[in-house]
Length: 262
Image 1 (tube, one colour):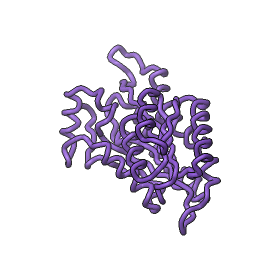
Image 2 (cartoon, helix red, strand yellow):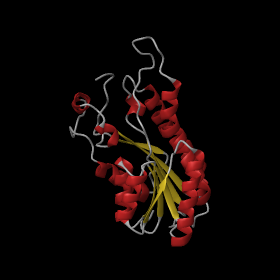
Image 3 (tube, rainbow, N blue to C red):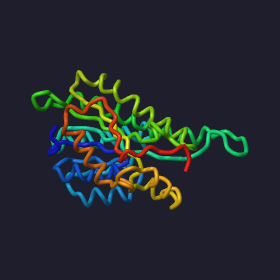
Image 4 (tube, rainbow, N blue to C red):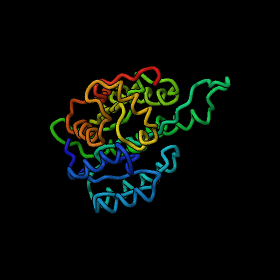
C-alpha cells in the first residue's frame, strides 16, 4: 500500500516507538494524526513536522476522548483530501505487580484496570471508531486495499516475567485478536498486523533500573542490545507496504526469550 498522501492515525504518537513510526511515515510522504495525552510534546512535534501533521490530545481509555480525536482527524482529512490509510495503535503502559505480594495481598483491580484499559480497551476502541471511515475509503491498487491496522503487543505476550500478569494479559489479548480482526476486515480490503517487540529504547524502558536492563541484555541472543526505535519504525513501514502481511504477529526481539525472573 502506498504511504505517501495517505493519513495515518497514531496513538501514543508523541513519544517512543509510536513517535519513531510517525516520523518515518511522515518522511515517506504520509499525513500523520498524532494522538497522545502529552499536549506539550504532541503540539511541539506536530509543529515541527509541519502541515502534514496534526496533534489531538487524547486519553485512549476514554471513549469520548477518542471520538473527539477521530472527529478532528476526519475533518482534517476532508480538508486535505488525503484518505485515511491506517491506524497504528501505539499507546501503551506497563505497571509491574505480583498477582499476590509478600504480604499476601492480591494485585489491586485499579492496577489491573489501568493496564487493560489503555493497552487492550484503548486499542480496540480506537480501531472500532476509526473503521467506519476506513471502510468507506477508495480502494487502491489491483487488490483494492483500503488500509491497514497495526497493533503493538510485546514479547511479554509469549514469555512474560513475574510481575507481568496484567501487562502480559493485555498484550496477549492484542496478539490473539489479530487474526479474527483480519478476518472481520477482509471483505473491506483492510489488513491487521501486530508487532511484538522485546526490549527497545523507549520511555517505558527508561524507567527500568540499570540492574534490570543488564539482566534483560543477558537474555538477548543477537544483537545484545536494546532495539532502536528506528528499527521498529522500519517494520511498521514494511507492514504497511507488504500486502501479504495480514492476520499475523511479528516478533521483533533479536531471538530474545525473557527469563522467569531477573
